[in-house]
Length: 90
Image (cartoon, rainbow, N blue to C red):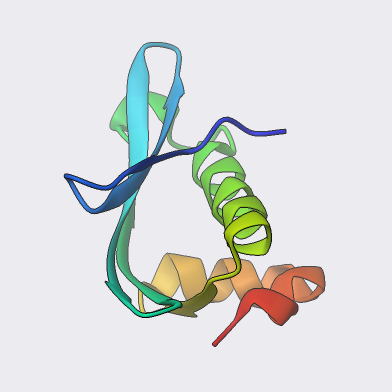
């Protein structure tokens, strides 16, 4: 299981790898979480970190019962590549 952390104070999901933090900012309205931005530090790009972050967010959505609106182009593309996660979309 990917260790994605919901940093509620910062309103972002975070994944730390190699001492760097990739994150996805979000806003929440009831049980719907909108993700406008996903970012991985340059040192983590091209290594699948952002994909693992998205997978961890989906795991949290399933565990906590929220749905996702992927506004970020990367997040939207990730969901297109992972149709098995479509049941977490709002």
